[in-house]
Length: 499
Image (cartoon, rainbow, N blue to C red; front, side, top):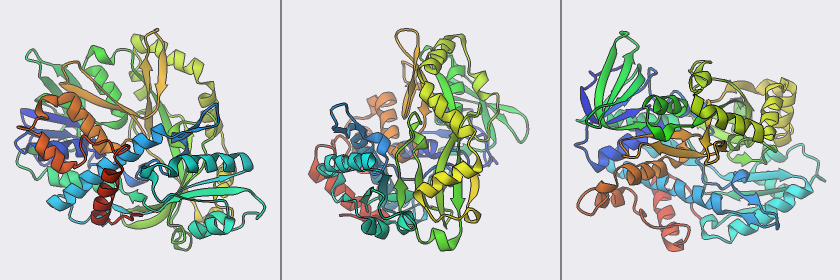
């Protein structure tokens, strides 16, 4: 419930009180505490959609174990470039959180982050050969210093006992492990950031306020219209800058703004389900995140994994996700969401993507028609001795993949996240999905560079930004010494492991 009156005007309006809205608001507030910031959230609390612990994987994506980030090339080599990008982007989140702990914004980091090894695990000779080549490519780079590899079932069993128990000894298996990984509860982190932000002098947070429209004013500012769901009234504020970090709602809102840059964009919603185990006798024996190989044609967020999760202090296991299709753009959304975003300008890009992504469509149909028995068999490929009575189904958060118009009048399905905004940079929306939460700091920096470049000078925000992100301007993929130094520093503060 909103505790404050909506101000008539603000410097910055943030739509969505998830991890992205919380991160952007927090960074802007620390860079300039005099900025007036208004946060609008349609639900009764922050982090109830994609940022909630049980709605996302919470892996602390660092591309240690996600095999979809390392593709095998036609010549047999392994391309690790995408994995490198994601890997160092997570370093920026670590630096931001470390700064916030030292600044007193976060009192106790163990409330939201804890050490958790990240593993890749495969079965079968072909997959074993792939993982071996992947390990050789990654372990040669300083960003994966300390990566371990084994094709010995006994060693792998020490790393993740339940993965190997009951598995035939003659099955070819392989695994890699990074002990420097993390498990992150983004729901708790979002609460920590939003609760601190709304205590600042010039910041307000308005729950149960659903933004219905965004209109450009003659002076270039934006009129943000929101419905107070408690009173039914429509309230408004005028903002110099608008950030739409509302998950699946970002696309329809940027469409309503009327900016020509959104012309032709569409969204493809993907739903998901998990199998969840809270049984202490099982959950307490698995203290790692184990990622396998994705099914052919599946979207990146559907890579199967068996994760240790600590959500709201409870230790559990999570397996999945099992993908599906829903026309909702938000878990707490409407089945009309997809249809309400259809425009004459995006019909052709949508049809083009539908025609060129048959494997994805085939995969989603297969997931939708899977029986509970078939779903459980997939879990048993990771955990052979799993018992059905220990697991229950849980619904994951909704994800919306970007369909971007191309120069030929068609469209392409985009994986990952992207900022889409007006030419004058007065409004920007974050579109897309994984690995958004883990790279929230990187996305916030992208936003600063795109929309506040005039402030990133030595006599303005730049010195403070370098205090918040000490390696700002440094390419950690190339600077091994800086990479090792920042990881040692942030690990000590956040309670993570180093090698």
